[in-house]
Length: 205
Image (cartoon, rainbow, N blue to C red; front, side, top):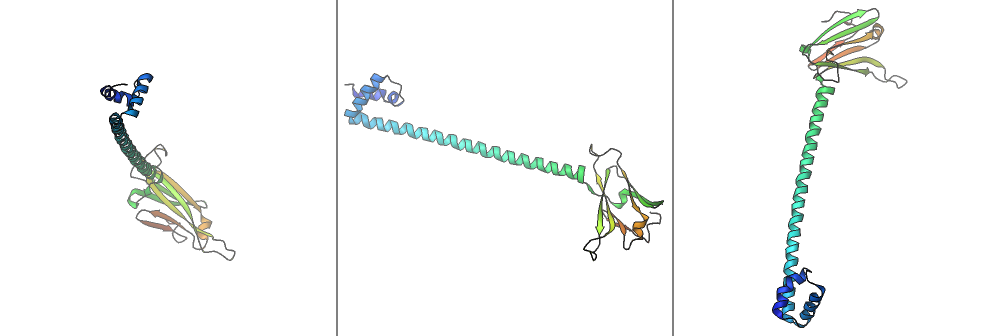
């Protein structure tokens, strides 16, 4: 039978499975018969398990921190990109209403057409949006068109629009103004300019 001091020296290697099958068999048989060595074996095994658990916990905590930081960076980056995209969309595709001081406009009548010519003077690109103005429903439940809303917007120069896109012409038929309450509203950032049957044929400004 193997001596106790030899078994105790070999216990770490025995626990790690580094011994030959014959030596493991002898140590296993010794542990069955020796209470002192069996107790030491149990103590060493428990210590190794605790160390492994502690190492695994530290690894898991580290991975959690890395994943949390990575997620936070990704969210922050996505938010910044979204903000940049929103700002670019606003300045390059949506723009802001033109102010009176930055717009030169003239009106004229050519044949049966009324025209308003607009020129932006602040170096930005001009984008004009139009919307129909509807009146109250008639006896058939239809809302008649009683005017047009003309909305000039200024945008930063961009590849989306031509570099010299600073002017715009809008036209409406004279017959439209002869209709009741028909009007063209030029909506600027600091107020509206309204053209009706009373003033459409006058030169502006």
